[in-house]
Picture 1: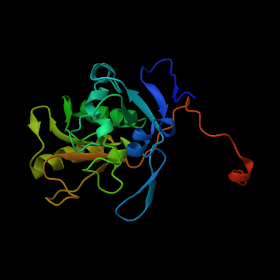
Picture 2 (picture 1 turned 135 degrees about the horizontal axis):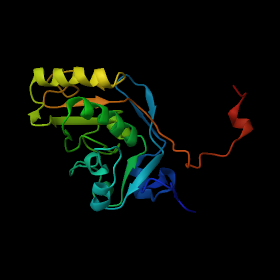
Picture 3 (picture 1 turned 135 degrees about the vertical axis):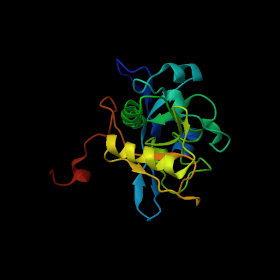
Length: 213
């Protein structure tokens, strides 16, 4: 049975993560759950876009100025199946790119995402609890234009700007502890799951659905 679905305008294949090979399912955990630091269960993405090469990643824009390649830079901390191609990114990564586009327009220059600062799988060794990085909806920005975000004043300044242009964004508080930041600006949209229209979904089951709203 086919695992991919086509879109006439977007070049990457849409993939149902539950129908991928076991080695990918074990690291993507499609449709599974992770608990956040407050113990709340968060449902992981089920649908992903497949990236077949660095060339494709560099050539494919998620927004006007951001390509796929900027969201998949990871190192040996990532699970082995996702260190080589094909790679997979949650569909909501497109929404993150559009949000960052608003920030880039406001600053008028390049916005740089750090290594391990875009999508990270739930099996990435740097993933702590339910990190929005596992949803493809978080970015660690280490540089804007020629300015490195490595001082409290600089991080605060660009965090304030991010809140101005992306009203619902969350930015990580300052500090040198694990859950805080002192050398980059962390922005995220929360636990957003995107299901494109061409995704197959599930068959309607009246017995499981209960009363309609």
